[in-house]
Length: 418
Image 1 (cartoon, rainbow, N blue to C red):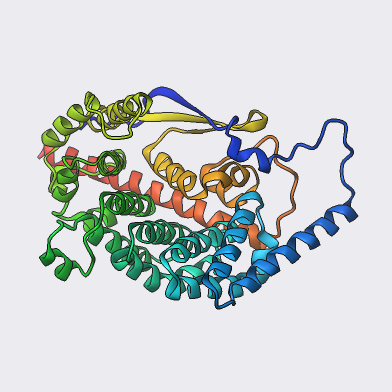
Image 2 (tube, rainbow, N blue to C red):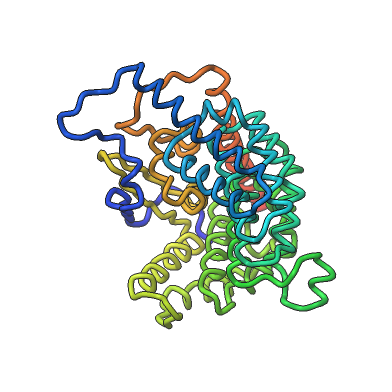
């Protein structure tokens, strides 16, 4: 495996600036209109909070359709606003009611409530609130991830649990518990025996792909030593997943393998034969077979993605992606670690991605991003510290990985001199 980690592939641009789904989040007023006064802003905020309170009240109703309507209203608000103050004052009530819907709701309600838990954590940022939400949600979302009655409910629970663990998992043990849940799903072989052994129902390809992506996201928070312990000799599971028919599963697996190579892990030591993985990636990089519903553009993106993964495995070349936003802002990521994290937040935030990238301090710290068009906001010392904790965790893990790689290099030199 190549050891160069500094070279970059061609820059890939993704333009989010013309997405219709973001039209309602624009901060631009009508041409020639005057700026609202502080009193008008305060009055508007009070009105908006009253609407939010009505949504919360609906979560106590017996009729499931009423609760679902309330969850939809809250999710829309989470997407179009960064409601830090409201969440800080109401997080206990919100978390309790979201979990109540997760425990007793229909599949549709579970999908909404799981997503609401993740949005609650993203809005609150790193700190005591997200730690509390993750701790309370872990057993319920883990159970749903493995035993949910519908694929949609399972995928929603998996994605929410991954986000909660990423933001609120302050200790390695709790993060590894979530990762073990995802591993049990992604390693399921589709047999009754596997159901009994792993304690999880047979996953559909969509569920399995979500579990792989969730596991990979949390992989970015661990040191190389912890990753090696996570995989041990089970890396062959990932290699086998590159051969499955479903494109989503293959792509998610490819990202995991590329990430492992980028952060300095040796594939052979984890039960994967590097030569075999390279051949699998080469085949996927030139695959022109058409899956049902897949467009020509999607097939082209598939081949491009696997070529980038192959370059990482063979040469240590990391991809660079630039995402354009409205108002001329652009976010650049140039490692698989950043790419995996970015993909996870884009997928989860969906139509709220641009709004949160522009105004959410947590995402600014994670991606080291300062938007030019962001409003000046004053953050308290506590809130700033909370946002920094996730970014600090990322930087600490990166330094630990570099230290582990340097020590491995010194051991190799010493062994060679002997």
